[in-house]
Amino acid sequence: MFGRRRAKTIQFDQKEQKKGAALTAFDRIQHVAVTSSSQEQLLGICDTIMSGRAVLASFDKVSTNEANYMLSFISGVVYALGGENFKMDNKLFLFGRKEAFDDGSLYQYVEENKA
Image 1 (cartoon, helix red, strand yellow):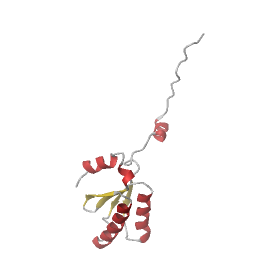
Image 2 (cartoon, helix red, strand yellow):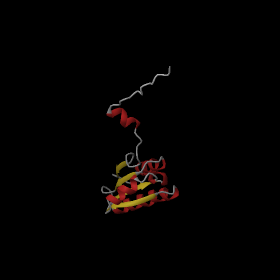
Image 3 (cartoon, helix red, strand yellow):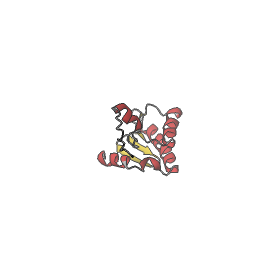
Image 4 (spheres, one colour):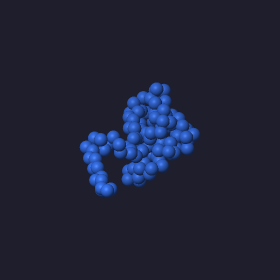
């Protein structure tokens, strides 16, 4: 009377699996090569952090004074969001709001790439 139903097996190709896969904070990280201390670039970095994405920023192309100004400003934004910042290399920094570090992928990246 009640026949057994076969479970349907659905196969996805790799593109479809990637679309549906949950991304970690590390997967969503934005890489930025800071080329000037322009207000536009500074606020763009801050907007990205405020939107929930972590930023890995390289300050190699700007002077030390410009980099220090930008680092101070960005660090203030990160502090206000309860986030964290890490110095990865001499002029390479990782910034993110608190929620970006919740899954642990960014902490793992920091541990694996300490300067």
